[in-house]
Image 1 (cartoon, rainbow, N blue to C red):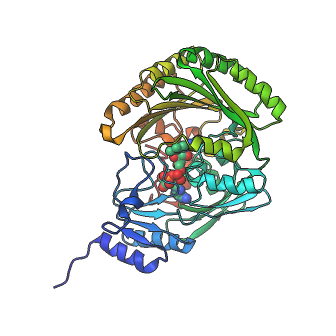
Image 2 (cartoon, rainbow, N blue to C red):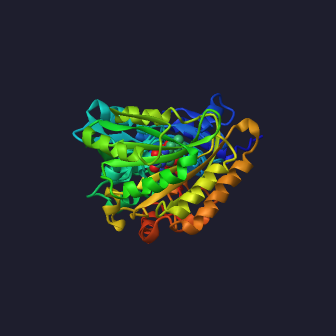
Image 3 (spheres, helix red, strand yellow):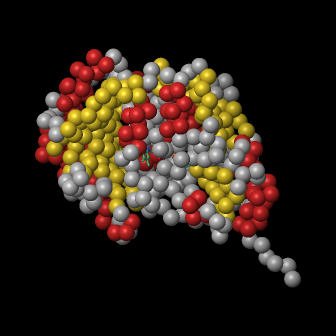
Amino acid sequence: MMQSVSRSEQSVHDLQTQMQGRVIARGDEGYDSARRVWNGAVDHYPVAIVLCESVEDVQAAVRTARAHNMPVSVRSGGYDVTGRSVRSEAVVIDLSQLNHVHIEGQIATIAGGATAAKVIAAATASNLIAVTGWNGLPGMTGLTTVGGYGPLIASHGLALDNLSGAELVIADGRRLTVDHDENPDLLWALKGGGGNFGVVTSMKVRLHRGRRVLGGMILFPWGEAETVLGRYAKAIASADIKLSVVIGFISLPDGSPALFLAPAWTGEISDGEIAMEVLKRCGKPMHVQIASMSYQDLVQSFDARVENDRCYAVESRWIPKLNPETVSALIAGGTSRTSPFSTIVLQHFRGLPTQIPPDSTAFGLRREHVMVEIIACWDPATGDGSVHKRWARDLSQTLAPMSLPGGYPNLLGPQAQDQIAHAYGNNLTRLQAVKRRFDPDNVFSATPLTV
Ligand SMILES: Cc1cc2nc3c(=O)[nH]c(=O)nc-3n(C[C@H](O)[C@H](O)[C@H](O)COP(=O)(O)OP(=O)(O)OC[C@H]3O[C@@H](n4cnc5c(N)ncnc54)[C@H](O)[C@@H]3O)c2cc1C
């Protein structure tokens, strides 16, 4: 009697015969750890995770999945909060084995699975700096193709402003080179449109001279938060673009809230020390830890604060500025946190990236703004987190009337339909045209391009 073989079993069999890298299917040893991502709240069950060892493996995975009409998702660092890289019932094209970084002159060629930390380490060894986020843990491709707010934003732009080329495997399994001469529309789209056009097997990014920054953290008591944010808003308006600052609402060891300003200064140390004094005078700091350090040490100090075994849900808004109305909403949100692990992070988009014409990259917002991350975080042993998710959603709703339309696509989950529709502003029509040209069957769905 003929045994019926399911579509997924047949696709796993074909993947196993056509790929060099390991194929981990349901029931295989290692399946549970291979499907896990950073966010403990994500519990997705793909059909198989394929650990690609070469671009040919990526091509084989795409072609095989398509031949069996199986959905795919692409995993680089696995730090997407909603777990979009590990899709249930899909073939996961895992790039973690493709993680080499090669530097020539001031250009880094970065394989699709390299983390930002790996890129920073390679750049540091060449006395150069890579434009990344504040954390080194996420994949460099997921970060760079959608945005990349980080410690160098005011002086060197978003990570995507430093992207100069890429190699892609598109939906029919072909390899494409993308740069200013070949497929320039696709290069434009990759600067904000994310992994929606194919598997980015490598990228070329521009590095910058230098490796040291003046940075660290200035911690203020919660009772001063309103004054500090008000004074910060005034001080930053006339600050040099060599200064970038991330602001965070965190918990002290006893669980009570506190506010930090974490600056990064890329110019002369003596000038930076003056800039730090201005920030310290925003209040009466309870703790100051500012020093000249390598960019790598700065980013590692943020990585050390990331908790890996917790559950997360994130809401995000673009607010035009910190004014009395937004500050008081944020402080009320910080005060009403339902978990000591939850935080609010403010990333200030100012300086160089605001001078880049809005239509020169797909990224949707080039005016000065503050990107607000409302991060609900809880211990998985304490339940499904609904109370913490509600806290984040309520604060996001409170901020909505004070916010700009849209939001940072890397942080917009399926619940943020109103924001997704506006995330690319006037660039949406061109972005959709590139999508129709290179991925008409919507094989690759990374961050949402539209609702
Ligand atoms: C702890 C933490 C800190 C963060 N800090 C910052 C920060 O400072 N600044 C900032 O801007 N953002 C930050 N982010 C957001 C982060 O940049 C995004 O979540 C980013 O998408 C993560 O990239 P990844 O490769 O790790 O994600 P993954 O989960 O692997 O992928 C994310 C999405 O991109 C797609 N994708 C990934 N790689 C490829 C590829 N090579 N080809 C095609 N599609 C691909 C995936 O399919 C998925 O849809 C942070 C996130 C976390 C969790």
